[in-house]
Length: 102
Image 1 (cartoon, rainbow, N blue to C red):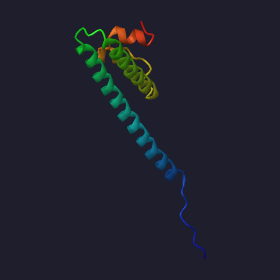
Image 2 (image 1 turned 180 degrees about the vertical axis):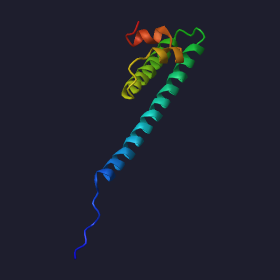
Image 3 (image 1 turned 60 degrees about the vertical axis):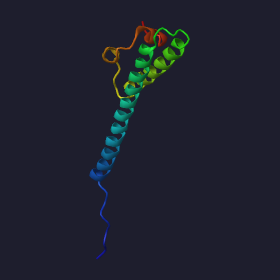
Image 4 (image 1 turned 90 degrees about the vertical axis):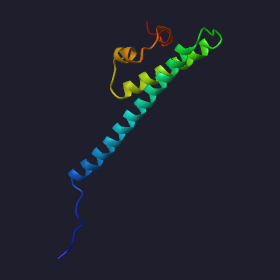
């Protein structure tokens, strides 16, 4: 009588894939949270700029880069429409114009 090792059926493979899928989704969500936090920080710095015209272009550029990265991360998570995020983070029009939005 011969012994055979237990076979890894489709259920074990599916379970391994599911675990990996959950880890990927968790990392996407964490990255989206970090990107959103960066948007909050850069937009707050831009708003706190008290008329310093020398700093404004740099702050606008930083905020636009953060918003652009956030929008890309949202799209990677399957969120294609950004209107609610624009309202939620109260992203200034000057930042959106830099991204090509009007």
